[in-house]
Amino acid sequence: MPMSLPIVATIGLMIGLGYWNNWTNGLYYITDHDLYSVQQLLTEMVRNMQALQSGEMTGLDPTAVKNLPSTSLRMATAVMSVLPALLLYPAFQKYFVKGITVGAVKG
Image (cartoon, rainbow, N blue to C red):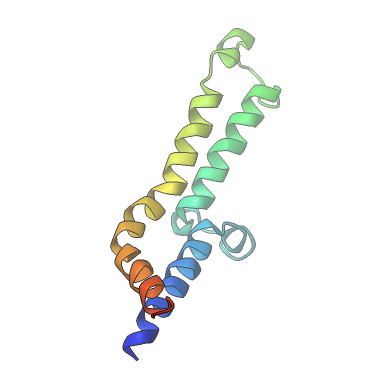
């Protein structure tokens, strides 16, 4: 069991990040906006910004729509989606290094 700890930590981190980045389950199964995941909320914000810029919303001043920070919003969503990986990887790094050294050829 002690030798399998790095493997379990790696697989657990990858599965957890897979669920964190998955927004399609929220799209398919969740209808209540209060239960949306962070990824679903970020995707909805980007879609709303694109809808504003494409002119689908009526009654808005076209010059005001041009001044909306679409690039800043996309970069902020990228930071928010990467944040858990940046916080969890240092905690799991010792298991990655331990797995590499245990599996190395000794001689």
